[in-house]
Length: 380
Image (cartoon, rainbow, N blue to C red):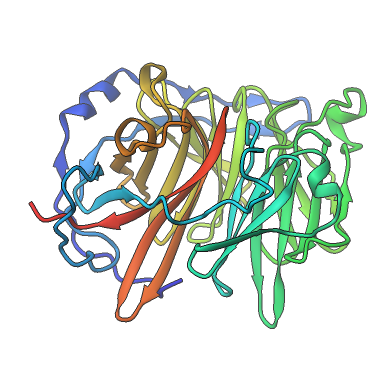
């Protein structure tokens, strides 16, 4: 990853589309949960849409695109399809059935991993030009790796935590994906009487601790220690937080978790240190938010559906200004016909000489697949 650059001044232009946000309303009200934790009152902030003419890195060199090349996005954040990247291994071609997985990036080694149902992990290297099926532990291919997070370690392979929504457990391993530690259904709180547990995502908050969200069952999120790999004994959230707290992401800047409330189309910030909610941001009405990935001051939002049940978009959210900087539509505008519902997405940022190249990687669900988009600066 490139070093964090100073944010340059933005020149926002408010899109007329922002008007559709005016109908959004609501908030998280204070209430007691079954486990005794109190949720504080947080007003909902509706995210306006503002075009940015500059970004966190230098714009790509202007390019005269070939006739008919499709572009999606606005302002600085315009993308084209990169169909030659992320080719599938031969044994996977024709066998992607309702992909329902996740993407993680090992930036130090320039390797991207895709969690694919019944295969486990697929690796991509050589600037996303080569691929292979990782020969990991059989457990990863037995069910479905729904969400995951990666933690770099100096002098060691990264740690990976993964949520298996069909095997009802979470895993901890390095990127050999061998001999994973596992955690099954928690034996605490509401789980003592109700054993349903379908974890959907995990997030490291340090080398010693992570959180898991039970998005498909009881809707709680729980802290977990890394060594020993064990639940800490507390639960937070529940259905009044979200009917499906699908994704969970750690923001190191303010030490908070961003919980992706899918049906509500909201991201909800929870302070790890203060143990309370601090912000709720809403996407356009009807958007279903699956997860976010953070790079510098930007969140890449993977959306299952867009407004009015349109194919799922990718949205780039400026976390400092709390605005939507760009909306990218892989199916409607870039020709990814199988991309009805985006399930997860990741920033992929690499140096090419003096230039920084920015890509958006995504995986979709039902029928499902994978794709890559490249940031471009098309000549007018």
